[in-house]
Length: 377
Image 1 (cartoon, helix red, strand yellow):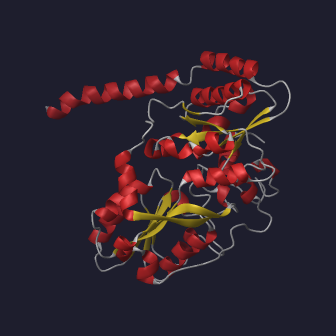
Image 2 (image 1 turned 45 degrees about the vertical axis):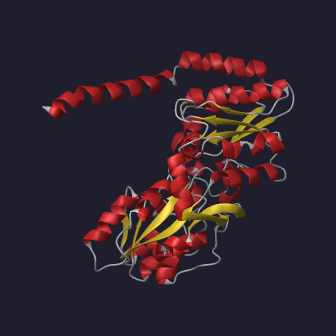
Image 3 (image 1 turned 45 degrees about the horizontal axis):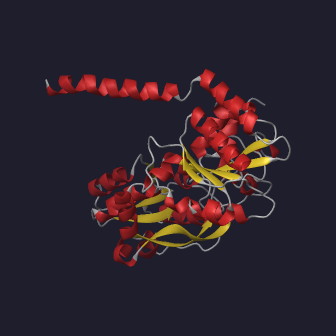
């Protein structure tokens, strides 16, 4: 009876969620916002806006948002795919662990990311035990069931997924489970993009998911220090269009501000509890990003209090350098938005979703994969 009483409430929540989604996909409203964008856009010169979220790129490409914009307003994709930016050296470390007999658990889109010589899928083909999980808690349960085997969780993702890793570590996972931590944080990468020569950005669309955790404060330096209009945005077509309009309006008014378009999900202070969890478990260190090189204070690593769970220390695996970009691949330029996927000579020729050469073609959040799946050639 209790279940029956709850079911209508669950249905109402689902209907409400769907109604909200459809409201932000209203084609008539989208056309009206697009008209406003054309009205406020400069008549001369080029405006370049960078987003740093794979889901934003999917929305922009899937719904044809770029076709609604003035020809001199360009929205480029930055390093918003957490799988794409993991350097080959860290994939190599996971491969080494797997070939040593450790059960490596990871998310499905990590499996085919290329390392220097092989991916985790290649290691699996050679007999290594590599298992796909849907959450870090799945890895915990596996380790609890198979106490005679060593497990490692390959922890990849931005600030959105780092708290869940922190929670499991704080809950004292089984002794036969360690963590290969590859979490990154977004704002330092945005800073590198602003300072990059010849990229010439005029504004940022900041990622909604990450912002639900970190809030607005980490983005304040972009308008204050760099004069860069920055809008935190949601993931529906109208979210993107609103954000583009807000940036163009700021440019027209000669202002640079941090604004929150995604007010229905993002609070100014973010999720303070999640922030505390990350601060308790992780230290922030310099980290390599595929396509961007070494970025100061951009990678999480386990602090000394939790070093017993560090797979590097426990199993003695550490790869200092790897081969990030295969011959002929242009992923490093796609990741920073300097070229479009179609400008890579391998795109949809030797590099396809079925047989990816570069990291950008692997994940559903990778720019090349999104273009391959959503654009006709």
